[in-house]
Length: 248
Image 1 (spheres, one colour):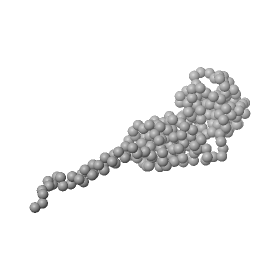
Image 2 (cartoon, helix red, strand yellow):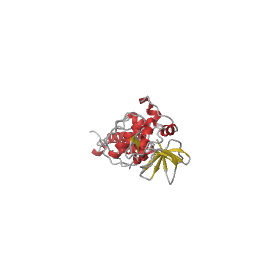
Image 3 (cartoon, one colour):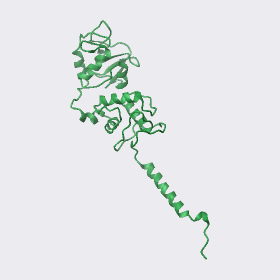
Image 4 (cartoon, one colour):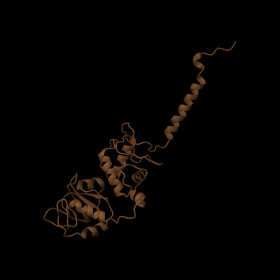
């Protein structure tokens, strides 16, 4: 007659095996490198490190997505000068700042966080990462002043974006484009798109207010070149009042 074995012990080996297997999976998961693999996460955004690595080919993250990788995207855009609310939702503001980033660093402009865009976002020098996509290399920032001075005497025109007449942000955008750098159209959008600096260099942008209502170009200590107001022309003039500075 066979030995009796209680029913609750008959499957003990398989239970132990399962526990061991689950423990192994838990250890593997804890040590695995996480990379973006899906663009439509629905989990609520959790705080993530702005330096979190993406070490393999990243999946696209596009408009309407939410979750961890949208949070990471927003944080990295903020590292490069954006001022997004980090909420883990890929909405109009995130889309706008992503497009601005792609244009600024010569990535292919898709409005989607592609593999190329992730590499630029995670690089301390995005331009170096992305410059192979263009044959036009931006001039040194100091060269912006030389370009700007070519338009000395051009009249201020509200809404002007050409050498027949400029307003303040129309002038800075035009000069930067001539230098091979993209910045948005308005003073406040330019302020949001560039990286804030405490010590300006020639060619950096100068902002009045926050959000900015006026923008000009830093020439040298105490001086700027600007399209100031109706009835004036573009000229180099002293800097007055409290200002903030940005570098594209």
